[in-house]
Image (tube, rainbow, N blue to C red; front, side, top):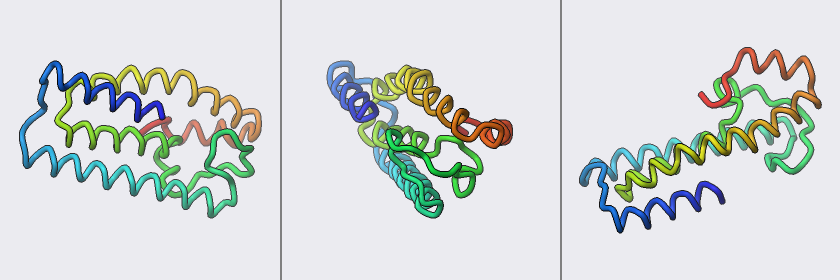
Length: 140
């Protein structure tokens, strides 16, 4: 919901400030590629969770530490997929304000939700998680 709210505010702000990225057809092509990439990343992460029989919802207890699929290169591929999808939509809507809003949104999300989850995973999986953190970056 945080990403959706940020995008809506950015697109609305764009109607007042008219800050364009570039014109069609580039906005649709680049934005469409990013949308597809975001969806693919989210689906891949969900498959990795299902393979390990652990819930994707962050409010449910994690049963296993997932380290395969997109988790080989990102500790947070689902959140990364939200950001990529957001950028794709911001480009399609040709909205620089939406892109500007994404920066503090990701910083806040990283400092709150992501760090809370990392503390939980560290407590739940201990050295296995700390070893994983050394090998794989938080975002990309």
